[in-house]
Length: 450
Image (cartoon, rainbow, N blue to C red; front, top):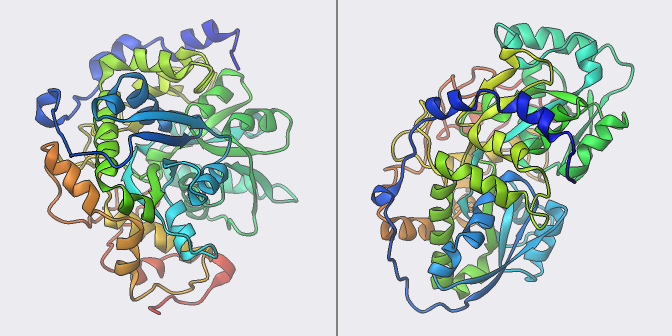
């Protein structure tokens, strides 16, 4: 829905645009950013239907369509907008669409959960890009955005007291209990010292509805991808408590998913589709393209919001609160990463689209931690399972064709600076990692291998 008070937002959110442009990091691109001429061969299928849910994480699909990246690889694509991630998943499982944008954990849930459906991930579409919004009532009670505190310890002491000053669990909205946002929110809550299974009641709503649930007092906060958090700041319905990048720097957010059988039946089409999206991701990370991208995303067929609201999150000119204060207006050039930004937690060959096996290991530990699967210990055959759910072979072939240098190892360790609670993550020892957490579902015993 269009907002008449966009001008007010522009003065708040884009005041330091000139500073942002000067401070923005350089963008890494393959082949020096030159147009590629890659031919993967005869396509098995050229007319595709791709699903998406309206948020800025869908930008690569939308830009690949609008800027001709799909067409360059011989693909004729219809983008299908759905209101929920469950809707995208259902259509993928029912073979009603060819591929789609979906939260990172969904293929794991589909394969290892009750459905046991062969949904797979082909590539990551973006890193970071989400935030946690709290109601204005929390502000009135003295809670402030993360940037107002000296460190996380200072913040968590205050918000823990606020949280526990309520007789009933606070209501917290997510788009899906099995989204990346939901797992990062649980991680954030437990790092604060709150128990997500008893001190919070999670409810599911489409991100576009969350502001109205917040305004109506139905929820006390929500976690969602952009630009839906900035919408609450604009409307003074709430404020940003934490951005997801500060919970886990460089976390995977949305992926391109399809059915395993579809990819096997259409291997050339699969590679053409991925190459289109990798090039689109690089296009999306260029600062000089982002005003145009915001205008495209604002279209009623896509996000149906004011372009300025969208552009602020794309360029990283981020508002934590509607209060007029420089500290609540932050320059965050890596708020969303579609391919690569020159930041300290990404190496030169560590680009957002690479399907890191270690990302899958981390997500599996959290699913086990919260008993979201009928798996209560870390599987001994996890490597084999994850190879099927998050295959790397397609991406490696496409990257080679596009002259993208790949990491030498599919696993990477996350240092203590990556996570909000200062815990490091060694993907080669997931059981030890799991057993570090005192807060987990049903106070479960020490984890082992099964």
